[in-house]
Each structure stands twice: as structure tokens, then as C-alpha cells.
Length: 198
Image (cartoon, rainbow, N blue to C red):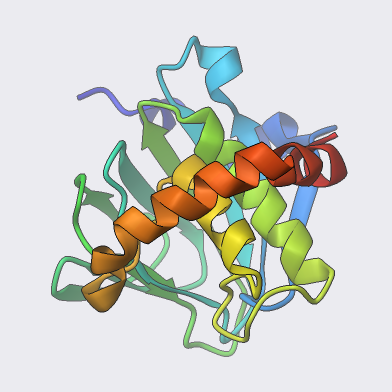
């Protein structure tokens, strides 16, 4: 597979791509994201995300069913889990995350880190789901592990963003579907999108 960020040759290129694009801060996870390319811009082929993570910043273990990812560290160091393998990556280090493989990352150093994530195929729900999740975190509406406090909002984000948690959470899929349906009927999904994505 030809990955888009193989053609990105410098931090200057990334900074130019980032210019004028919204940045979204998640104070709970300790990171800031910028969508450098969205599915709308690539005809659904891929999305490209820049992540800037503080020392100690992390995302909890999860997996995706509808897209694969590739991650490349630009600066700093990142500990990444794919499946049951854990790797420490420095600048230029990269990993691929196949569909339905456990995934998490953490910056367990004392310095910031920057990395790119390419998502294939692009998923509009993932793009807007992350923006909403980061907005909820800024508003103090998530738990310390980053999950929304409200189960109906959680269901909306699980469906939109294809963020799935391992273990017992897998058995909650039918309930998540019911809650997502309730959210649509009550307009929760529309209100979240209007508040955080406009």
C-alpha cells in the first residue's frame, strides 16, 4: 500500500499543511490534534492527522474495525502498543495498525512528541468524533481515562469514530447500538456536531 506520508519530507512541509487548520486540545489525554487532510479532501482515500503530545500524554487501549492506520514519529519518543507487541519509537520510527488490532500510545518521557497518523480509508465519523471528544474533554465532560461521562454521548462517539474498547466492552456493543439510536432520536448527535464541529 502507498502511504501518503511517505511523500512528506520535512517538518516545514507539515507546518505548511497545518497552517490555517483548527487545532483541537485534549487536556485529559495531554495532546493536541490537527487534521492535515480529511476524507473530504482526498475523496475518502485517507485522512492525515498530526498529534502533538505532552510528556505523560496517552490514549487508552482501543481498536478500530473500519480502517487501518500507520503512525510515524516526527520528534520525541513514543511507546506504542499494536496487538500485544510494545515498541519504543523515536524520530522516523513507524508502525502499522491493522484493522481490529489493539492499539495505544504513551509519551512516557519528559519531552513533547509529535507524530503523524494516516487513516485508510478515511472515515468522516472518526474525524468529527475526535473533534467532539476533544471538545468534551476541554469542557470537563470526560472521565480521567478520556471516555465521555455521559453514556449516550459515548455511544454516539463509538458509532461515529469506530473507537472500540477491548474486553467486557465488546459485549456491550448491542447496548451501544440502542443508546446510539436513542441519541439520534433525541438529537444528541446533531447537537454535539453543532457545538464542536462548526
